[in-house]
Image (cartoon, rainbow, N blue to C red):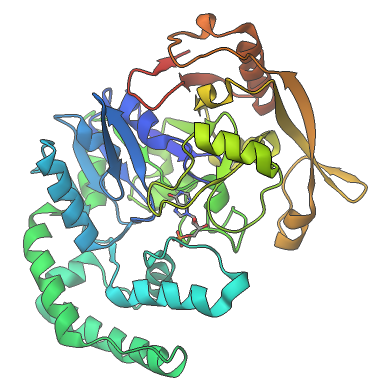
Length: 424
Ligand code: IMP
């Protein structure tokens, strides 16, 4: 099995967890490279639902090693709760989990800042998950973040925590009129978490490159999606990390020359959570139907997801930016009851037709989707186990996507269970 990066090619929630679960069987190491517990990767195994926020979805496969890379921001309390939750469900989490010594720590003041900023800007808010992701990455870029290696050294941790609190508490009191954080409370809690996590800490770049040199294969598990990427997404309505394939190298220390394949995951339609442009968003009646059938509620925050038609302009650009070599299409069954299905093939902006999304956010908000319409299949696909068994209209829809995206579809998923998916 080659080294493969799996990324979301829309706005996240494409069903990456399930695709990773399918691919994990054939590789040795599964690594998360960006984001934090803003992600929620859902996998249904034997009627039980597992939602992973930080630990790679590959943990459900015995004998695989899972790693949280340097590009991830880690809330240690959430990590410990997740470890305990998995153990309580009978999943082994022992020497099969590693945490990079270069990953950054999310601290309580990051979470408070995330929420206070969103409240303060009101209508102009991003709609973040409130998990402290943005403020933690801001500290990283500002070179005041606390990394796992700093946390492991008590003296360094104390010094950096005190320095950060001085600055953050001034912000809380002067700008937000919010209560300050005390040093002792955070220090004690994080010293406690440290004891329980210390044994997982590894220097990931050396570990991963040595493993690859020994012939082991790595699966890079992307979180969020291309259009939430801090550089390539619908900025500023994005997350704060690189959710695109390049992020896999930066967020792990594995060079681009070691990546063999990039799989893009898409839903058969489109969804997004939070604010920001969404050209193909459904009108309210269709929104209600697809949201209910697709159970489109966030795995992390429970927020209802916005839903819309498949946007080939968006995904075509994702193929380009990520170098996608194959596509997995999920939730095809959710369109089973639609008498017609639409695909957006261009954006109209004034009297111009655009083949790629515009960079400026105000232009993004103005584009009108140009659709082509296809007959629906009006048949249950949830038990189909091969491409040939799909109704002809569904096959034509998928073939048309391949034609527009110029990349082959290699996995199709027709339900949430492990067995409701097949290779093409
Ligand atoms: P943040 O990552 O919490 O800062 O949120 C920034 C934006 O990314 C918001 O619109 C969130 O709804 C969105 N977002 C973050 N993580 C995910 C995810 O895993 N799936 C879908 N949307 C996400």
